[in-house]
Amino acid sequence: MYEVHALESKEIRKRKKKLAGQLDILKKGRVLVVGDVCLDEYLLGEVKRISPEAPVPVVDVQSQEKRLGLAANVAQNVVSLGGQCRLIGVVGNDTTREELTEILDKAGVSSQHLIVDPSRPTTRKTRIMAGNHHITRVDFEQRKFLSESAEREMLAKVNELLPEVDIVVIEDYAKGVFSYNATQQIIEQAQVLGKKVAVDPHRTTPIKYYRGADIFK
Image (cartoon, rainbow, N blue to C red; front, top):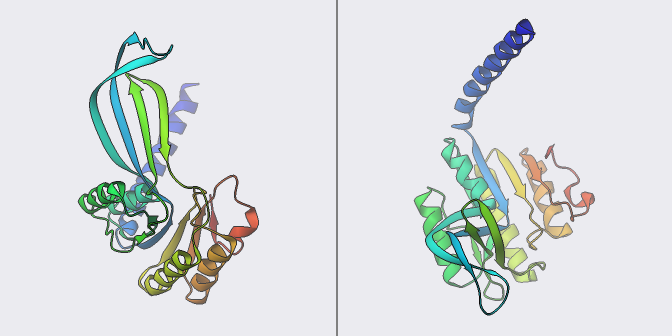
């Protein structure tokens, strides 16, 4: 038994060393992340009483956190690993967009390629927590495909930035950024330029949307 654990530990160390070496490669990587972006908000507190208005807990909020969510979080991860990242997503013309872009800028991710569509809100997910207990989540979002004009603008930005990157990451959270037409155009244009395409799919999106991708999660 001891010998088995020793072999496992040696193998794990070997894999960690190999992975650490590959992280240096990421510092040279140029990544285009396209997808649904979101502001994740956390209201953290404690429950000491039940509401007199309904049989629900009252959370006394003690702190608040705001983080990058969905594709914005992926872009942040790329930058944190030393890579160069371009982020394309669609946001509304609202205060949530302003908060999102501020956090992006602090994380070293440019917000200049975000598309503003006044007809839809910037996706925001507010989680209410009491200690380690997740009480509820409140979503502000619009789950429908982009307008024709917004989709054209997104595809134009993709075509503009593709020559500058090595790989395209499609982050699909089914908020409406990826119609079949848009997804296939992105993949086909990447193929023309010899760029790899990685897909983080959504379970409700038909698999045919991603036809032609090189890497599939």
